[in-house]
Length: 425
Image (cartoon, rainbow, N blue to C red; front, side):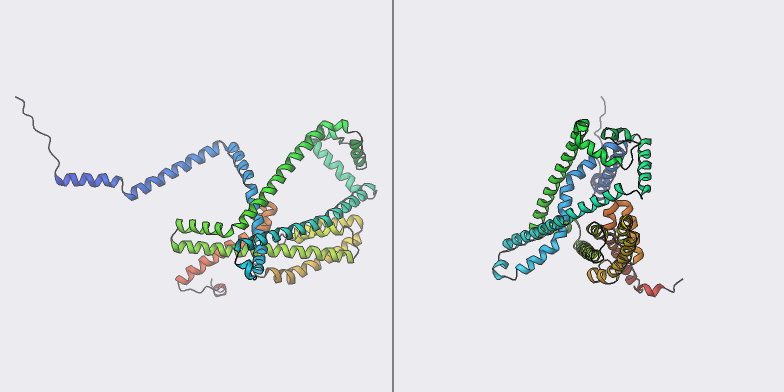
């Protein structure tokens, strides 16, 4: 007879220890660490596949950005128009009837804002475009009919030789542009292509179709951007409230208030700089147009437009606009170029010492060194747009860095003024 004994039952202490180990598997800290490891693993896998399929990922990203462009431009349009909209709302709300109907006040303000902008753009283009065409045609006639500018002929030949090295002249040959053509042949080539369109019909059709499609896509994006900006202006309080709600939901109350305070300061920097710089550049462009007319200089509208547009770029803008303008006037007369040089120097001194400080004030808080640094760095990263927004971006970084340093110094009972550290070795 086999002696069978029942398995030993775990003691109460062993059972308690087993339950504690089992519960430890689901301990909050373990779950949190496991979640972090899982997220890091997913990120590493994502980085690997991104590197392995970089071209495809970049194409998808570019396509995604193109889809978002109407919304990006809509946000930019609404942001630029918001100061005018707020000012009109404050004026309209003085009326007791309108102040009791916020929706009516908002609708009227948006309508007036869009009408003001549309009228200003219409006046601008109706005055500027004909003058620009006349200036460009006059410049073209001078270049093609003057025999004293042989350097232009040499430049054309050099450019055609460079194009031939890369095989580009083979594609241009279908339009009558060859390596041995001269500057005087260019008008004849254009006239021949207009009188004998059959020679170029295939290329013209394909080129025209591509241009038309691109123009249609641009027009669609512009229309969508305007619609998006209108919706943003209508529901600006709602969108801001939703953003604050998400911030408070994702952070503690103290950190959320710090973040929203940072956003308010950043908005003041950007809105003050952008609106002020645009107004400043508009005034400089108008002054340049008036003074050039008084001094009877050529290409008044074209040069004034160049000066006004490039003036939005801090520090380097006046030089970027002045150099091509002086070269244009040199073709007409060295005397006019010299007069314009004196004019632009006086105009920029007026802008830098009187007009600019009056309009912009100390909206950025950056010294001249950091302005130059911001324009060069952001211009290298983002091009012309970076040169424009680089200053407010660096002003925001400067504000955050200064606040962080001053907070740390106060905790250490140290002075926060920079001059207190001049003599420390």
